[in-house]
Structures are given as structure tokens and as C-alpha cells.
Image 1 (cartoon, rainbow, N blue to C red):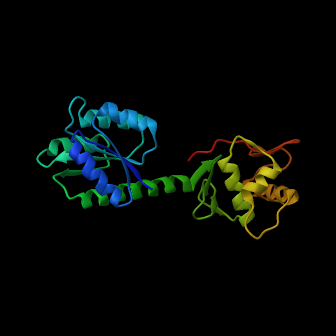
Image 2: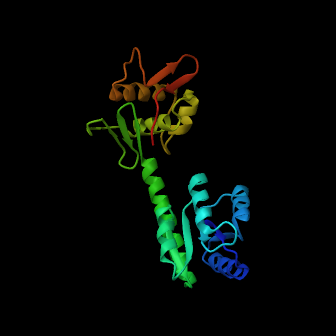
Image 3: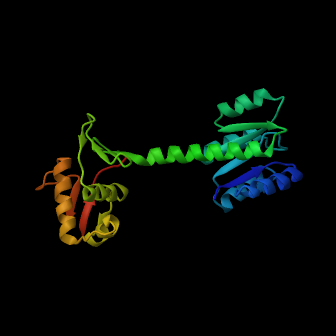
Length: 231
């Protein structure tokens, strides 16, 4: 469930808009000013901030700057309809969207949902493609690509094994742990199958079987994916 933080100094707006958002299945906490905003953010996990720019004390642009420096949360600004300068400045400072007052609450719901969807899509795209040692690993396309973009075919077992290594890069993984991370429904796997999959994956990565540099054997412990992974 999407959880948003509404920052507005108007108590009536906080109450009525908060109730409206909850009616659409959104969790909504509220804060009246910057101090309450920071305290509330520290106390819980949020997916998005709805921020009024016309606030007493620290104004919305000041708080937007703080949010951009200290969090990665999407921000939707609430602005006065006749204040295009603040809207432009806010967007230039990194706000994700804005809604001009007065507004239809349903419009705000739609914009919240759009911003969250966009953030989810970006996160998924970031997670789908990782690079290491000149290789690119595309989880969605299930492809291993050379630096020149040539695809190297992976079996299902090899794909799951490489995914486990990428996720746990720099950690020694026992065969038992690799079995847990790569087991697929309806398949029988054992220590020997892990060793075979490692051997085949090494071959496809061009990793020397005698002196492997990517997938190292740690005697008595398991395997180590010994390279930096970038996402």
C-alpha cells in the first residue's frame, strides 16, 4: 500500500484530504511544518511526499531542497494557481509533479498514482540490468551480454545461479545456500548439480577453471563471486 506524507499548515486540509486519500486505499500521515515533516519521516517509511509550498517558517522550496539532499522520495507540490514562478523553480529543483490550488482531490490521487507507478518502473529497470567485469546481465530478457552486445545463452539453472551470485557479490556462499537461492519448483538439485552449474557458468564467462577470477572456490566453504557489480 502506498504511504504518503502530506505537509500543509492548514489543519482542515490535512484532515479532509487525508481522509479522501485513505478512501482510495492510500495510507496518509500529515505534518504541519518542516520540523514535523522531518520527525515523521524519521519515524516511518514513506513512498511519496505531498508538499505545500506556502508554509510558515521554512517554506516549501526550502523543504524541497532538504528532501532532495536527504531522501530519494518523490515529491508532489501543492501551489497557488497564480504562482507559476514557484512551480517552475520547484520542478527545476527536482519536484516530480505539482497540483495547483484549488484542485479536485481526485486529480491529486491520479497524480500520486502516476508518480508512484513511474518510480516503480524506474526501480524495476534499474534492477533488471547489472554490469560486472565487462559483462551485462539482463534479468528481464534473461540474457548475458558481452561488452560488444553479443548474447551468451544461459540455461535456466545457469541463469538462476548467476542471479544469485550477482545479488550476493563479495560474499562466500555455501553449496547449501546456493541450493536455497537457485532451487526451482519441481526440480531436484544437489551439491553436485551446483558444482556442474558453476563449471558451466565459468566456461561461458571465460573464467579459467584452474585459476578462476570471477567465481572463486573457497575451500571448505563454497563459492565467492569476486567482482564489483554495478546496477
